[in-house]
Length: 427
Image (cartoon, rainbow, N blue to C red):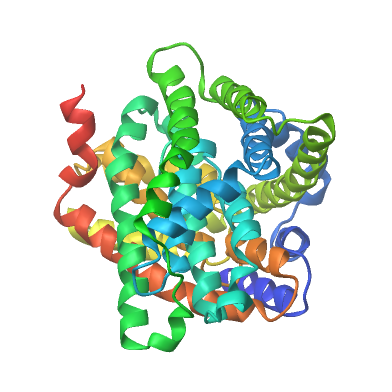
């Protein structure tokens, strides 16, 4: 079954089929060849049950938040400010890609929205300044994954609901690792561009007066982060309601800057519908594949393979890491979390690992899955914005950042306080 699932997914993607279609066809194939029951008859029920949850409402709201910031020019100004402050580093605007993704992730909580928004702003800079396309595109795909680690994070919410873990503590635990991972991404770019200067394109000259003049452009992300996260910690709103408050804050900012028009807002809504439609089709196909994998026993078989041996805690964690890296290469991270966490988490907790810590480590593994071929969703998001070239270039450019994620995982295992310091200090 594992060989069939991986082989079919690679084949469908090699044929150029959309990711949602590929996921759905793999699910139908598993149902046809490995199940005595016609599981395809459950597609309607799976689609309905997986798309009507209250948390799902936060997805279009966070996408709309990003669209308003993009269409109003706030995202462009934020990108320009980050670019001005990081232009001196080897790699230039590639650091702006990562820094802007980190700032945008703190506002919207969605990796797809982060990658799409910053990618749309940054893409024209490749040819303008002569950057190496694979590495530049890799910074956008990898930087976008920060959206599921730096609060607000939809995935941390889902993990908290599944494992009955405090979502405010998870949010606090994600801040330091998220910022550390962004710094590690920048370090990887700096090392690559120092070793091979041709990768870094032309350096953009910026004066200190220009940098200081752009400091005000950092206020919008700070304001929206305060509204979204502050409303949760003060008990004023749920995670989904805070997304709506974030949209309201973005609209207020846009009005205050005199950039709000009905035409602009309608364009933002229209693009939100298109993006949400793409995301939801992938999510529904992933949930159907998850349902089939569970029904035919594939997920349980893989988990049993991991837990069959009486491993010490560190050995168990290494097995879990390998398991998620393999599974993440051909399965959507949300569906992977929903299908495996209820089975894996009790085993991990019984081995003595903290639930908040494991939530952060798990999300880092999910981040790696988002840029690992063949199913890494951020690869497809950036390729969709690019609209030319081969997706393999983006996957190649993302590999240094996968290594950075694995290094962060090693640090989290060796020093759990990286994630647990803030929750303990502010408890």
